[in-house]
Length: 568
Ligand code: ADP
Ligand code: MG
Image (cartoon, rainbow, N blue to C red; front, side, top):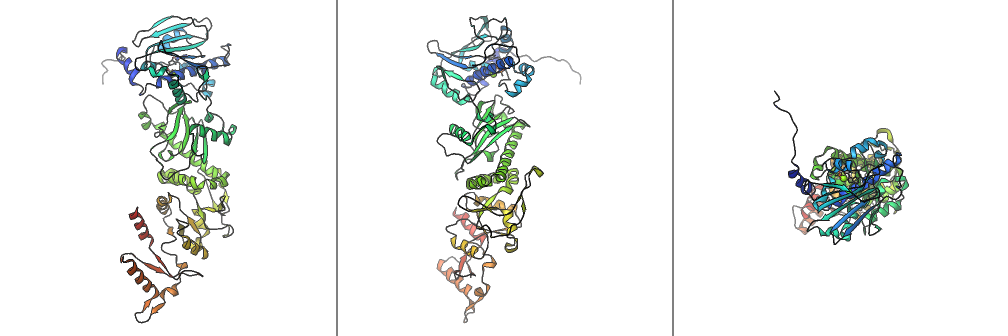
């Protein structure tokens, strides 16, 4: 094809400006996050410059200060950062969507990698016009020979530049608030916004002379420098008045993604709502959202804590996150890290793993139900409380392996491990291995220790091992196990009884020579009449063993499930 003409697309500032100011961000309050982020960046930049030896002024007490003037209707944000020359204002402020970040990062590569700069789109500053009729900048650059400058703009595409009487290096942004935006003149409102968005930004932020943010982000610290108490304290800070978490995972990686964070496992309640997340998402310590649904795999939503990633493209629109490939890969990565950490815990501290299992187990099962990759990952660390006792069984060898291939392939001696109450726990593989001769690929399980006590005792007296599948999630989980172990039969203790428990002789004993009725026939008839429900399939069973009841009425496993489903 022949090209007829080539050229540049132009933008009419008058038309696009209102869109940038109003429509880019969904909430007005975001302006504060943007201005404080710029102040933090400016402070980081000055310290990078100082480290490189290009600035020798005092940088020992960096701070951001927010002031109000109710009469003048102004709000100002001052920083002790790098400042701007008149040239820089023309370049970075007057040119919309132009950021100094890239130039800076290229020049100070090493320090910038250590402590990343927040901004890079060159749009944040203009969010101030969502709430302000006039925005002014007073700034004084660290550069030798520079003069302080004053910039002001009334929201039109015109600006004014003049000399400023500022004498200290840094920048003050002053907003004259519009009608209807007076809430931002209230120190309490600003404090609340700082708490939400800027709590963990690495510079003290002062209101009325008082530091209002926490300004230290535990997730950016190295895990070895934090004690259990530090982690718990942080949890209580994030989620006050909540039960302490079971355990936590400190994410800390630079490759393939920069992801930092601390994820806590709270106790799972039967009424968990998996559509809501209470994980907080940060980008470079700036709070972004606590609707993490796009970034965290669904089944991890019950977790709590913080995820901080520089790689999550925090553009202006959140719906953008949903379709983003990097975000999906980060989500997968987080899921894998969670699985790995659980495996590591099982390997390194089985006592703790078992002690938390009652709650942790619900989470692992919930994850397995919702995510096949996770199910695969945790299948070797899925454990069940068992009726087996130490010494009941010979030690058989079972290999437990992680995905990292030969990273560890520890051999467990197949003794079920115990919790604080002395209960033993075992994996399904171990159970099957241990009982392969007697059970012939059957797993016997109980769902209620109290109401099924007679049956449990019966199995025990016959030397048969039972697993307890009695958590609220097990009802949903057993069918998954059945699919997974297709050659294994899962039998609930009060359902179809195992042949080894039955006394064949007693069963076929003729008790009424006139009709040739066996004892079983008689019992069956009796029950059917008594309950008057001929379709109930009564299966009288005579049991072996001393003290065994003379008969038991059992529903076949399928009928039992059907009945329970109907009752639900
Ligand atoms: P971004 O932060 O993404 O770069 P902004 O629109 O928020 O975009 O800011 C544009 C530029 O203005 C910044 O890159 C920076 O060079 C400059 N700037 C803004 N605020 C300050 C400040 N408080 N101190 C120094 N420079 C600033
Ligand atoms: Mg910015």
